[in-house]
Every structure is written in C-alpha cells, then in structure tokens.
Length: 485
Image (cartoon, rainbow, N blue to C red):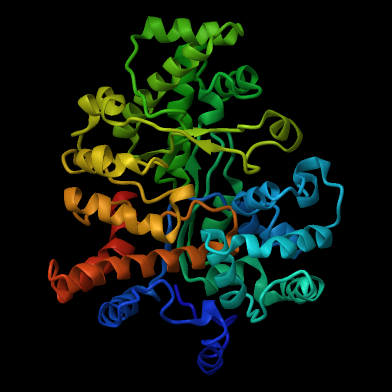
C-alpha cells in the first residue's frame, strides 16, 4: 500500500512540504528516539508498499461493480463515517446538519462547512490522522481544512471526484487492494460479487461476509418477518426452528460458493451456550409469538453463536465476533437516523467463561478458525491472548473501532505479544465504511507495527533480522492465515 500513488504529491513536493505538512512527514508515528526511529524506518520500508488485504469491512460491493462516481465530498467523507459525525455532534451540531438518514435538511456543501468548522476538534484523534492522511495522499490537498477555505476545498474535491481518476475501481487499483471483504445480509443474492468475480477487467478479490445478526437478535426490527422469509427461501420445506437452522446452513453454503471466507457476528456479549433442540425450539417459538424477554434473547443469541461455530467446523467459514457494544444508545437518534450514526457505546465483556462451551467442543477441531474482537482493552492480556496461546482455533482480533488508533494499537501489541507471540493475531482489520480511508488506516497499522518492533529490537529482545521477517508476517501472512486466504 503505497503512500506515493498517482494521486500523491511527487517526492520532491513531499520533501518541500515536510516542514509544514504532518501527513507528508515520512517519520509520522515512528519513534521519537533517533536510533529506534532508524530501525523503524527500515522495517516500514519492508511492508509499506505491500498490497492491502482487508478481510473485514463495510464497503458496498455494488459500488465497485457499477463503478459509480462518488456523489460529493460530504456524502463520501463525512456523512457515512460515524467516527467523524459523532464528534461533530458532541460539539453541539445537530445530526440533521450532517445529512443523516432520510431527514436531511441541508445541502452537502452545508454539511461540509460544518465539518470544516469542526476540523480542529479532531486534533489528536485517529479520525483526524486518517483524514489528514487521506486528504494529502489520496486527494493531493496540501492546505489545512478550516472554515475560511471550506467552499474552495469542497469545489476542489468535488471536481476530482467527477474525474475518472477518482472512480471506485481506479482507486481500488491505486490503493493496491488485493482482497476486500464486504458485510452482507444472509438473503443477499450476491449478484454484485458474482459480477465482479466474472469481470476480467477487475483485478482483486471482493468477498462477501455472512452477517446474520438481524436474523438472530429477537429485538431486531422486523425479526419475525425476516426469519419467515429465510425459512421459506432456504429451509428445504422444513418449518420452525428446524427450518431456521437448515436455512442458516444453506445460506452459509451459498456464501461459500460465492467466495466468502468468513461469517461475522455483532453479538451483544461473547456468551456461547449449547441448548438441546427442545429448549432452542421453545425459545424460537416464543420469540415468533412476540413473547420473548431480553433474557430470552441473550440465551438464544448465545446458543446461536455455538451453532455458528458448529456450522463453521463443517463449512469452513472463519468465525469472527464483535461483542461488547451497546448499539443505538440514544433512542431518539436511532428513531430519526437509524443505526450506525455514532451513538454505539462500548461496555465491558468477559471472554474466558463465556467462550468455554464453544471452545470445549470446537476449540481444537481441525480447520476451525475463530477470531474474537474487543473494545475492552483489559481483556487483551488477561483473557484473549491466553486463549489464543492455547487453542489452535483462536486468533486475536486486531484493535477494533474505538481502539483502532495509534496509541491503542501500540498498547494492544504490547499486551498480547508476551503471552501469544506475533503469530496468533488476525492481521490488521480496517472495519470501515469510508472507502478512501482504507490506505491511511493500513499505513497507520504498518507504522505502528514498525514502531513496536523497533523498540524490542533496540532493547535486544528480538534480532533486527528476525524483526524484518516478523513485520512481513504481521502485515501480509497473518490475515491470509487467519482468514484462510
């Protein structure tokens, strides 16, 4: 993933900007100590231009299939990125001003002006770092965003987005993306994925991911109707819970046939539980009657996480879980603007006891790969790294969401390595809806890995030659290994 693509300033320009542009500084995020920084530079050079492997994210496949021009700077860079909108909202700007959902009352230029005014709020944040990097290395902007130049920057970006050089397929190529996974509904026909896979002009892999949350969580809007459609579509004529399980198995197989390598689960907790068929049927029927309690929902979800692991052993899909988030914390915002609009808040989650029922039965099953993610840093060294240090099925999920930031990435690497080493992690996961931030996020991770390894080399804990092998493994081999690529 090069930071010197066709959209970047030339090397000479970058050198001229180094004193005034943070994003052009070749030593950004590298250690401040000169000796350690020199080691980090060499390590970064080994991996900075390797292709991007993105096995979990939320970019739409149809965008790449149709190669539709991006609409405008605000719709591309601000509105869909809840990392961005949440902080602007926290400063007192109503979400309506950020063109959220179907209640938008302002034009894109007005939203961009709100973003430009709020730009100083992003100093020190991961979002600010990614966006500054994207502005310079993807769009070639060299002026700092502010309220005074908001309109001029909007026009400059808008003109670029209308050019062929900034169409999704060209950017996919320029970003050096080799693998990009999407996140998809179990009943999606995956037509866009099939079209891309059969297109000889498209280089790279765009893989679907099986995401059944809306069919597992009793409280999901429209759950009963959605489940009925699932059973009628793929239940092989069975009804009730038996048809539901059969339909899940069949749709997973459909995804495998269309190139999927993983299933993803935004479970409320990490709990797993094996119910006998009669107990599971009773809960399922209770939910279909609209009588299930919140406790019933948690029990059924835990049971279905066990069932997803059972299915994974059979069909080979890698199982990833992303628990520990109170989704849609602010009801009024959810009612007005929908999900993924910035008010999802983390809470503490336990993994050791919660995962034991599943790992007891499947943790050593040949071919089973399981990747737990967390937003609770305390469990990296206490629970997740020790689990990955024993079970061959468990790989450590990369820092995710609120932890997907430079300092948190360093804390993660320090927390897990002494217990599980370097080989048991998943590789970097960008988990983004913001397509143009992908190269910045991966470059951030590569710089942090170089920084951490440089320190352990300087401390004589790992040889420099070995560190060069390790960083290539972390960046390139680890995601291929964990996600069976």
